[in-house]
Image (cartoon, rainbow, N blue to C red; front, side, top):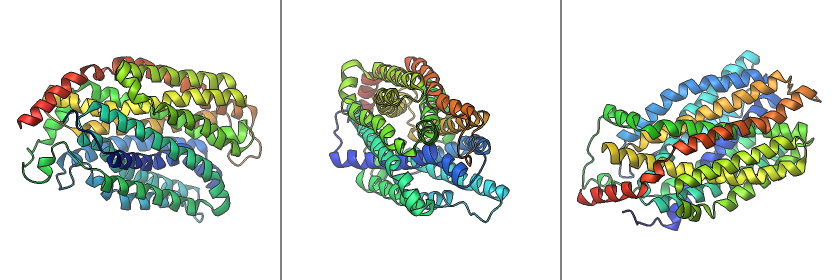
Length: 448
């Protein structure tokens, strides 16, 4: 099982599913705040506060979804069926989120925004992302195959981000947010369906076809095993930091290009500089991991990521320095995401190895919960910084203090988060047990 290869079709299908999830991430981290402030006309501080408050519901929804996956036992597996079940939720939540009724007053709009954001984030994205993360640990036990798959995922994610950042502003100007909402919804739903039909769970596959009924592990036993796993908590923090930085930078991207660089059209080349390096590095990440190990690769990627943001912070409004910083940051970001997603599966294996309880669903929620905390805090902190600088979404020209706030949020805020990522990566060393875990787990599966 350790050396079992995953077909190119499965790798592509899983990556397309990852790209589908990144449609929602791009929506929430790059465009949603700008839609709420510059189109709907809501105060940026109110939106930032809303995004933070919703995070407290995430803890509940993530635990529920993790428990649901642990209890799921179908002919399709445990995690895979939720790529199918999520489709109706995806279409409904994305379309509703980007169609705030104009006839409502400010209070009514804010209530509508709260409800649809909860639907999109706490229900739809929770179901989708928890299932997709858990699926990797059930497709293969081979760490090299997992690393290959997560690198391909990051290529798909970066392409999605690049395309959406390139076309969304023009689409909004041409047809409005209503049709853009359907574009997001159909793209995400299609990717989820491709992932469902194109993948297969191998781990415990006998349990799925009924030839070897699954042992029912009580939820409290699974939860106890996950809570005793020290890397469970580190995954939460790692996800919160990297996604928080992505959200902070993404939330500011529209404002930075439109106000600091002077034209929203700069969004495409600035994103392109990030995307090219993020895509390029992921062709080499599997080889780098084989050469120096997953732990050192994780630390190195965090260092490169932070260096890129330092250059962006120094650059201010200098487009050349911004582009250089984006290229370097993109290489670090692409590698870090590829490594951290492979680490999720390693943490699942670690719990199985140490405590003899395999908890894909609960371990996967650690990353999902941390990611959504990061999205909330990243967007909220950025919104508060912009509000403190006096940003006014309806103003023709922004004040000097507002421009300074945008610059800080786009660069230095993320450099600070990057330093924390480096520190955490040093302690997130589950990769050192990889060979020992795979040998023990493969032997256990053969004996069963």
